[in-house]
Length: 258
Image 1 (cartoon, rainbow, N blue to C red):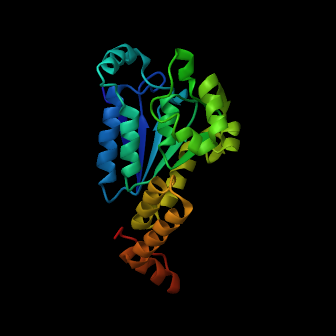
Image 2 (cartoon, helix red, strand yellow; image 1 turned 135 degrees about the horizontal axis):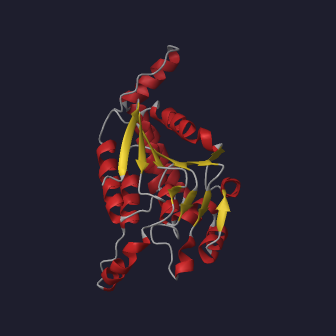
């Protein structure tokens, strides 16, 4: 069975996770998704990726709990599965930007996957949370690390320690998602946002993503130094020259990623 399918919308790749009934993140699904991201990130025709879940009930309602007994044995041997973390590292290292299109339940590993994306677009029917504590567990795919970076330590601890869920509007107010839209508009809106990203210089987009990943925990002065270096790299690139020329000539730029 294939758990991941991709549809091309010009320069945007729409990647759908399909593991009924709630799109749980099985190890097989994670392996398929990582392989698909590897393929798309090296395809020059793809300039943005949208991740979404199949069906109406969930983006992803969490990890596949049926696999946990086997993981317990592996953990005792020092080989605990870290599939979501590994996938997150791959997404961080990509040159291509990611947009999560979230509807229904987005819980546990599903929220951790969404937090690996650059931007999260949320349907107004969405429910988000980290319920691992209710199983006597903690988040293992980035929920203790990525979540406080988005919403602050107090709100992250509230979600992680209580296992409570938040609705779409609360998630937006907390900075966990960037937009809330009617459920019927979700996919087209997310694809339009990704399309805006895809129309920009791939070189500049890659530099922006690199800075976001590598400077968030640095002192301000060092972050600013790296930002200035990145600006110079973009200015000296072919895309930088093309963008400036297109602005002066009052035409649309033709970016190549070089």
